[in-house]
Length: 371
Ligand SMILES: NC(=O)c1ccc[n+]([C@@H]2O[C@H](COP(=O)([O-])OP(=O)(O)OC[C@H]3O[C@@H](n4cnc5c(N)ncnc54)[C@H](OP(=O)(O)O)[C@@H]3O)[C@@H](O)[C@H]2O)c1
Image (cartoon, rainbow, N blue to C red):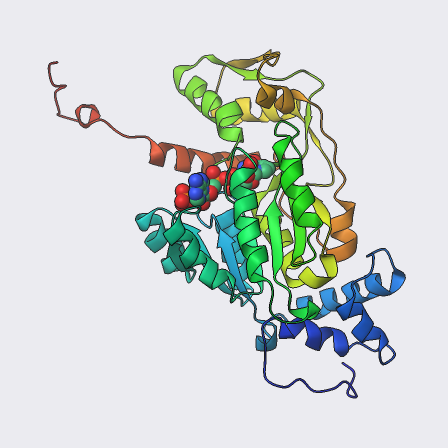
């Protein structure tokens, strides 16, 4: 740390970023310019700045001066929950929205996430989460939506709040996009967020997620394989022999959200791909799942021409997450899906069987009622 750097006064929202940046050994005035008018991230100086901050974070992540307040929209989701937990574990104060009172208590409050029990896009709901959004450093939207209306409404609400403070105090807004191309409305959302001059707008586009309950892999692969394993039959799935998937474990994705959130002002306007460095062959995944599930075999069928989601699934994807590595030092650490299939299968089965409702008459000694 540079001992000659000016000392900070009382902490303000976003202060930690100013502290870290002004303390860098850059000529006076130069560091200030970096903060007040962010420049394109490909400048050598900014890359050095990012590496400097990255190593500071890794070596000293229990420094209370770096605590942020973060609001996660959709904090109970497959993406939102690990993101909220990872941010909390890194020392940040985390708020999370849900519409479900039980999830608010069991998934959020019991895990030290402040629950906001709200329905978005309602007058009451928006006034509750909007008030918290006006007080935080970072808002992360992980809500599942099916058109541009919901995400844009949330984003514009935060933009409207973002009038106070100087450039270094802008709210960072991270939107969860997707690398899948079956939902063109996402580009409209991303374009508006990335172009914002009121917030630090950033997009993270995950590949196909895996881990725990399996997310999208459940309907396409894991559940049919489980049922076929129990019945001793084959299962059917969509794809071609040449299909490849670009995958990312939910915990590695959460780590990227953390790194991006902590560097918000430096990453404004960037869209990150979140995927493992290597894609995996669909048939390798199918062979591995057939083995652990005990299914007799599998049949590949071509995607239906009128189902964009099936077309996307069967399209070979090969992504390179190099921007996330060079700007945040992010490297996925979880084993790939095939390499870690034994652990991932056990986790999936525990979730899947736990969710299945057991009819009373399936219990020992109970007779099925006559209808
Ligand atoms: N999963 C993947 O493989 C994957 C890959 C790439 C991109 N994505 C994208 O990432 C986003 C999140 O995915 P996910 O898998 O985490 O979704 P998810 O598990 O279905 O979670 C969705 C979250 O959104 C909330 N939500 C859903 N509808 C809502 C509504 N009408 N109002 C308020 N909250 C609502 C849910 O909260 P409640 O507790 O209120 O129900 C839940 O917390 C989606 O846009 C998805 O397309 C997902």
